[in-house]
Image (cartoon, rainbow, N blue to C red; front, side):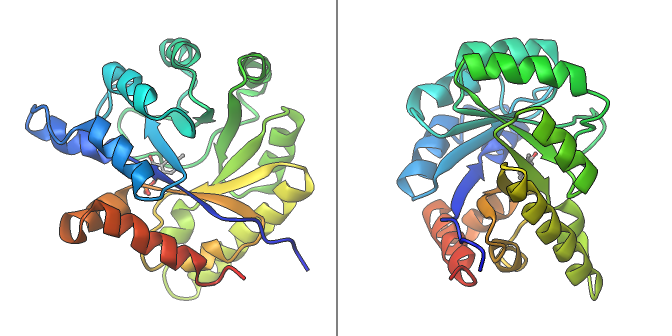
Length: 245
Ligand code: PXP
């Protein structure tokens, strides 16, 4: 019987900034978003400082760090400017993601093979700075083995294909995530998952015992428009526990 880990919820607050930027206003406040995320019972605040700063910007990140004293996860690409900022801001965790300017959101996982040498150096630097390193990767065995060789703390499995699957493909994609989670756990890695998770497809992913954390953004922020932010977080939390023994 697999050990079932407690399941944490990280909430990605980027889309508060998307909304603010749509009108070039000072609200909704990103600081309020960050503090409410924690007071509503999420375990972590997640944000992604993108190359084009399309949602949160540098100032937002520094402000978020001031109010989120622990459990801040910075998603970031392997870009020199953002890497530099990350060492200055010192989030508790960085999640390295691939980034393409033309994409709407992070499509696909990191090419660990291509960036292996750069990642190896960077992981050492983050270790020295006491920042956990996670890699956002496809549920793929070879990529997991490579990630383990880098000495990262963990991986976040990209659930994009799972969340877009329909019909019998759902089970197929779920199994890919499950097998990948088992493999990563055997390799001694912490296993998070995220992308495209919503109020329907989350319980199945939450049932995988090796997964210790889900990172969810768009569906929670969207739901909050109708039922309020705290309710949206609580309601997701409850769904996450349905299949968790
Ligand atoms: N995890 C990572 C690494 C991401 O890049 C994103 C999207 O920013 C998410 C989780 C959250 O995805 P969604 O907004 O679809 O819930």
